Image 1 (cartoon, rainbow, N blue to C red):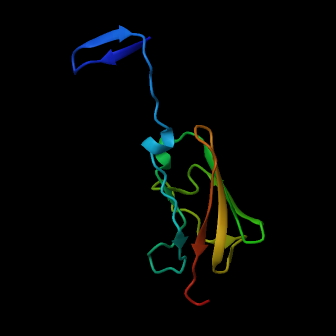
Image 2 (cartoon, helix red, strand yellow; image 1 turned 180 degrees about the horizontal axis):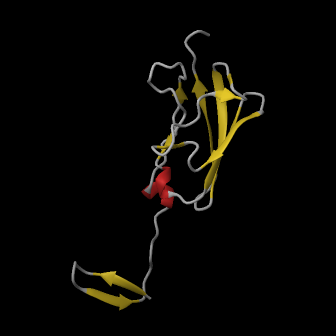
Image 3 (cartoon, rainbow, N blue to C red; image 1 turned 180 degrees about the vertical axis):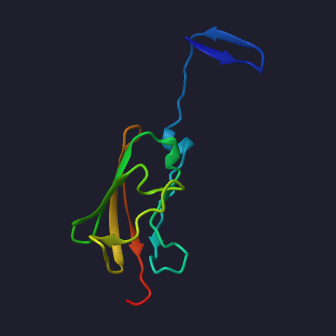
Length: 122
């Protein structure tokens, strides 16, 4: 049984189908396709928007050889609560190139993809 609203003040309780839209469709996550950590103030950090609606998540970023170069959860990669990832591994700048991510959530399926890290001097 479900409580169904007919208008703002009226409702009825009856049996029927209840359709729940996928959470990631209601609260989209914006993954960047590139970032350029060159200190010019534009796209200097890899950060993901829309994560404030999700309780548990973790992202792992890999280089082209499959080596893990970053791992983080809430407060590490989400915008606006953090700056995001600066494109460094063990304090050193990583080179320009494609990087892959795997993002796991407690509420929705895992997301995988890639992005480009671009540096001016390379």
